[in-house]
Image (cartoon, rainbow, N blue to C red):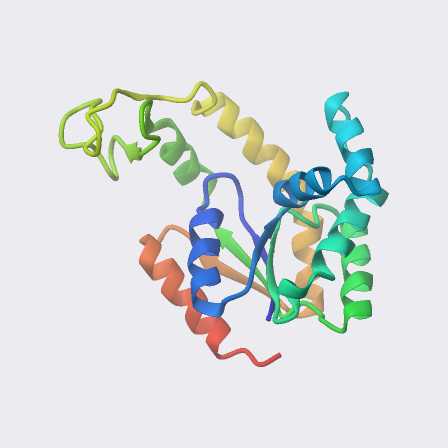
Length: 217
């Protein structure tokens, strides 16, 4: 089962990917993880990626695509994978299709966890994080028992600097503009499915699992 997981910042992709990994026993592969692994392994592509990142430049498509190709060819992807963060453009989607054709592993489904922008902004500006243990809370949806105090370790809670309305609106605008062509691309391919991410976490997981359990490679 070869999956592409999409969704705007704050939609809960990481949480759902972790559940799908447990359910289907396939690796969750994010762009960041791939870059870090390639750099750590000291591959030629990893060295090129590191040089770009160290100088503050974007990693060019040919390097990114090469790293993706190397990662998807590893043994742990033989039964499938959950891809997250790649592709980001139609050109990258075409390159991915070529890679997967060579591996005889075409994408099974493209799953987009959709949450309206206003809901995502509310999630972000209400988020609070423990300075000591990293536990996450929300002033409305998951408040601590004592205001600004972590339930787990009694540490102080804080709000991240980028968890504000202006930053979130900018991030969401960039995301929407960049992914709209990709969404249309996969809709035309007939493998795109949108999941309502406003539901409780367990309900989103249940819907994803039900959809995927009925899919045959």
